[in-house]
Length: 211
Image (cartoon, rainbow, N blue to C red):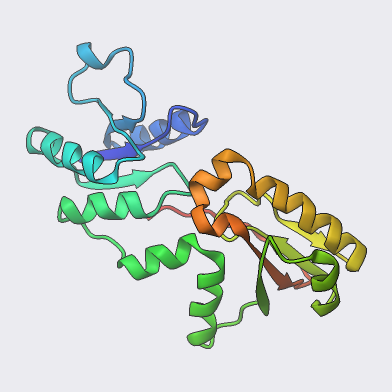
């Protein structure tokens, strides 16, 4: 039977969906989480406790675990975490994306640059510092526009502005979100940046995929 390492934080609400899908596919699942599972001692080879903030240590632990329970694939249920699974796959000699692609997928500004360089359609955008005065910046924008963080997922902090007053209000609101401790921890320097894109009218389609 194929074995999959599923990386899930303890706060995830997706565990059941992933496990049901794996059962349908006939895949054995090892859940890698940041908290020790209550049944870990009585179900060897089914769970693995990992420190997601220590990528090197987590990778070494997975490699050691895989010596007894080898993996055929690694999937992350953390939409904001792409570099970690990629690094683990590389260490296990499993197929993985190049680091440049992984980094671009995590950074919306970098993604816009990559798409533009490849002559692929993408909304015109500008990158601003949260320290910039929004009252001044609002005069440099075409409307309507969309303000968003460069690194958060699930549409968090994505705000449409139809005129300068809405831009200023959205800029201050998004700056407060980016100043939250968790956002600063996740984004680092990116938590001081706001991406502003031209609004593209039409039907919106959201697609979430796992590789």
